[in-house]
Length: 284
Image 1 (cartoon, rainbow, N blue to C red):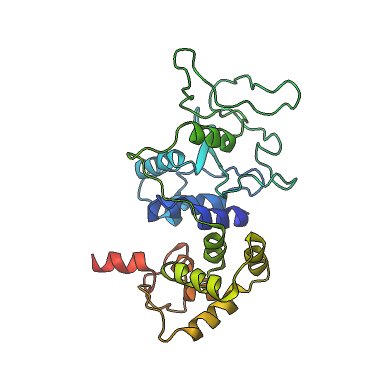
Image 2 (cartoon, rainbow, N blue to C red; image 1 turned 90 degrees about the horizontal axis):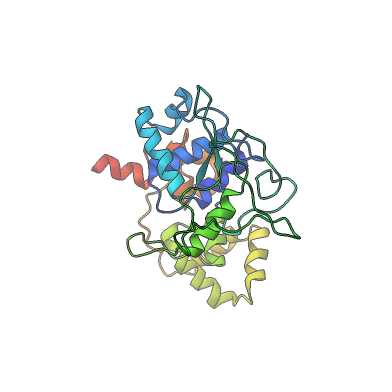
């Protein structure tokens, strides 16, 4: 269980996460239910911490706090009186909840779980019954509640409203979002991250895409790999890449690992032979 959620975290986790934080999120996603998006075992379970390479409970709690701050997960209940704390993964894809019947998050259907605090009344619209916007306090006009609701209210919907009401400041910089073309090329794994911009420029010049539908069609047909081969053949010399050569033993035999180091994982951790992060750690 958790494969779809695991891949979502792997591809769409915020770039502001450290390697350790992203690895922990991926381990928790692998342990979670794809439909309800809820974790199953305790985050401080010995096996969870071993796979996440976290040394102790205190470090794990710090990482959980960071994942909540970065809106990767939210506390969904438990954690008191000997009960296992549950965490729900928010939707990391830019499009948010798919809204399909197969999705079991609170945006699609009610998920019953123990609330972390006393139940609160959910405000609904008079006709549609949709979840109300951010809760505002009486003494602060325009302020937004500091904690997301935990009794089945959609945390990702709360996060979206909160983000729109409180845009990032210079003290909390946010990287600009990727364009549709960049997202699709990145997901394909056809080229390395530092080659992506040049590759897209070549596609734009050579094939003259006529809109988003063109990029989606290429992605759906898995044609980016073939285009990458043509692009490389068109180069006078091989494009210079700072990415180490793939060792060929990691990434679950996924050919995308040849050009995209994000796929170079060995037993859930960066490959020590060819992943840039692991190699930098060796030389540090």
